[in-house]
Image (spheres, rainbow, N blue to C red):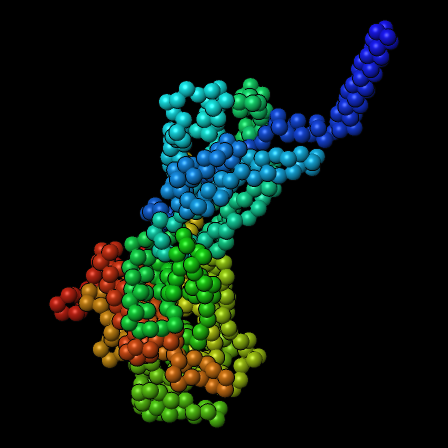
Length: 624
């Protein structure tokens, strides 16, 4: 009986051992053969790690090096709820002020969550994102707070298990992603927002997998994105239980930071312009307004601003309409400012001189069956007086003598109907109808700024050509690009587009434009005490279906000073000003005066007028 029982037990034991060996054999076959590829891949993924190092985006600065846009690296703070256990409230109370989050929201994020793997196993989710874009200094504060976190276990005799838990809670429960993000900052808020533009996030596939990066979305940020973005680096290495195994590091490529872009903008002038734009919006209540300051002899844009505007730091608070760079994207009929084209063309072609006298028909003139009138009726006027008094009839008669073909040629030579070449996205070319589409009436209406549409930038560059002895310049917005060692890698230089009129013609027109700002001209409110000014007003009715509005106007003044040796050309345009009037002479011209006075003082420009007598003082004309 006893022997039989013993044999049975041995049989059962052998059977169990056999089953165990069979099971082990199956498992070995399963692991080594059937699941070799996926398990090998998983092991390699755990052993080998590739970490991306994003390149710092380059800075944007003004002509003097003042910072306009910069990037800072930031952390993505995460948590492993498994290491926090039931102490969510204590941890949340410490982190909430530093992460600028509500305690209850943070507690919910720290709650332990389970998930089921593809193999059917239940695991604790070890990775929960708490907050993106946390500054480095804030992350250092979080580390300090967590390292000294008290949860009522200090001072007690702890078990080994409790000591391990406390160590993990303080050192490993809160961590950051292995790669850093970066955030774009504009330290001056809204200053030059339409020039700088803004950035947006995009996904790029890299050796470390898909990552989010920032790229330019508008303005200089977009146009010079390839210079600004830099080249990311990466590190491929092996990791163990306690982190990286440095001797087994395979690749270590340093990121190359983006280049720094220096603009032609002057932050001081830009500040003046934007403060005056705010005053324009407050005092005259236009739908929108734009101001541009150009250095005529080089084409450098020293200031460019629009209102309404936006803060690129708070892009989500703005609307598309406010982000539009109206100086290059919006067109309007220019009105009387466009008269400089026909006057300079006729003088250049020797059709007329400044002293040529023309009958202005006492304010009423019929051409091609339609009446043209002047707001201030006049008889016979010289060409100089026609420009000064802004006579529509006199200008139309000058154009008729010049002829449609030559007028159209000069319109194009001044740059209308073409891109100016400014390095910004979204510029439009305006509306210039081909000569074949002109009606019989066109030769009398286009010269006074009707039936043609231009951008504020096109108009100020055309006026700058007159100030620059008849040479049209390409608008220049970028001065240079430097590497991270401060070495210039690209230097931009002024670019002549073409000679539009002769030097002699340009100086004759300057004489006429100075009359516009005289006591008898339409822009006497644009006069400066210490500097001679040349310029032109424009008050254009806005076109509506079937004709022109009698209540909506586009008002502008474009002028330069000192008139005979110009340093600055300034354009002020307003869309539908309503107070105290819509006339450019009482809206745009005074705004020009305020901007010019502040700009001259800021730049310490040498006066060319005798302060007491008002007479001109001869000064050397700037070289070109």
